[in-house]
Length: 305
Image (tube, rainbow, N blue to C red):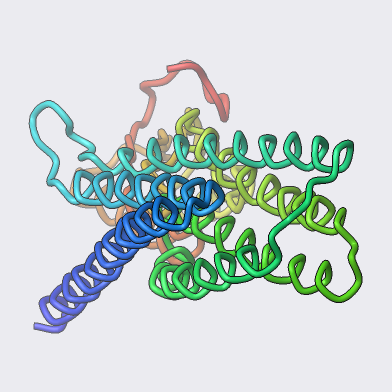
């Protein structure tokens, strides 16, 4: 009964988060439409440019949302591990785009420093403030889930970059208005671009490591081996493979050589104890254990599959 209640709460929370993400998508595309209309009526190229920036953010969130929906599909005969890696692929794509945007910001900053341009202060501050408020709402909507999902974090970084860009426009506009420091716009853009580049790189790195089936950074194979071999009647743990489907689900595969031949019912008790140790000590919820007495000729910790 308790498990059913927890499952119900989990589904409810998941649906609630999906609604927040969907609202952020709608809000971004609405901002895009408003800014395009406003840019055409005002003859402002910067407004139209910012509209397309918001359009790219909306597409990033949409990709993350779509990947999230695909990832919720149950395993089938063709995809026995399920579709959870769709979210990692979305995170990889979005973080790659973020890195490209960061370098684009560096490029534009360089040209601005080499050739300062006259700026319409009122338009600059007005556009920046409008974008800042709208982006802050979207950031607020996605922030809770970005702490738990690499996929959503990649979309969140798109919004964060846009929010910081809008903030830069407002701050730079104020400084230019009072102090006539026209190059401050380019300098602040480099600072924000550097932050976005670092954050995007972290998401990209984690996505690649998951897709390459790297051992999770918090997992120590030697510690696992030592803990398991302390269990009575366990002689050796070898042929170990540890990888992730997504940032939450850690998979484990290993061979356990027993100290003596025994009944299957007795061996199952040892397997259960191993599973409990892996879950409690290392948060591994999906172990695949092969028990043996004299099957393997090699007892190396690692061996190619």
